[in-house]
Every structure is written in C-alpha cells, then in structure tokens.
Length: 85
Image (tube, rainbow, N blue to C red; front, top):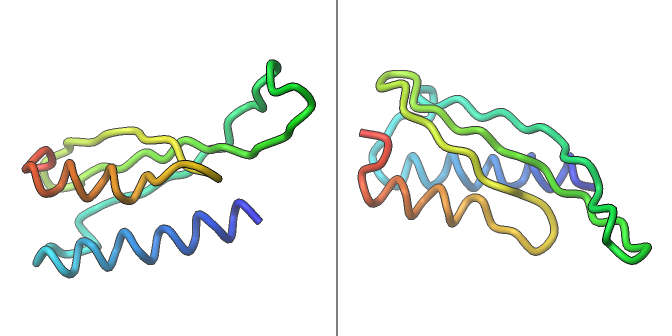
C-alpha cells in the first residue's frame, strides 16, 4: 500500500514540476521507510522519508510521507518559495 501511495505521490510531484515550468528530470526523489513508532499504542502506520534534490543546484530537502502526511504539498510550497533555485 505505502509503496503504491509513494508512486502516486511521485506522479503528483512531477506534475507540480511540469506545471511550474520546471523539468522533472532535474529533480531526484528517493524514498526510505521509517521505523514504526514504538509509542503507537499498537497501531502500525507506515511512514517514509522522502529526499528531494534539484540535481542542477544540488539543493534538497527531506519530508515525511505516509498516511496523514502530504510531502507533495510541502515540496510545492518550497518550490514556489524558490528554495531549490
């Protein structure tokens, strides 16, 4: 489920890049599963860390993904603010 969720979010992130006039190939995305929260009271919610790098400027950031998180919105906000330039 979470791998498919990430893949769907990655499509959205590339659409954000295209809509902003950027080239999706200039950005690298990497996903890494995080350990479950030991204080989760028996709940198992998969979360993952997404690393995004503009390969031209080498500027990057990390954001958390998974149920209840929206790393694509975080990425778009940073992109719009010129963080990756």
